[in-house]
Length: 115
Image (cartoon, rainbow, N blue to C red; front, side, top):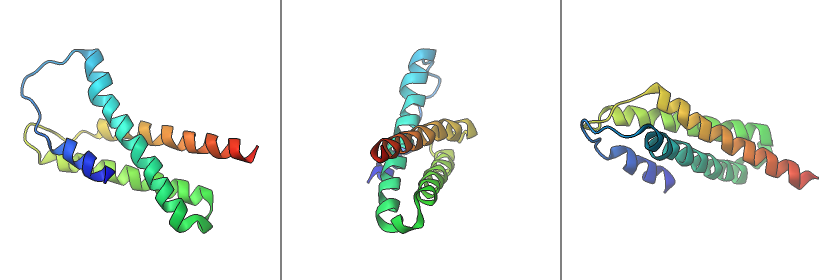
């Protein structure tokens, strides 16, 4: 379901020639990338941990991160074909920030549970 939400937002056409203030651009547009992929990584980790938990936590973490990163890349490819949008490798990097933050949160929670 969450991947459908991401797909929907990335399929919205861009707006031509509108200048967005830098702060709004960073918080609203790029912040959305971080949040979207933060949530996707948490959800994919939960899925992979439930179905492949015997593989070990590191492998599950890497699988969730790889899955989320691959979806980020294909989402940018999708935006290449969306009117008034474009594919930017920098956006995949911003998505990666959300992925890393989610992995750090998962790691912190698991560490706290051990103690």
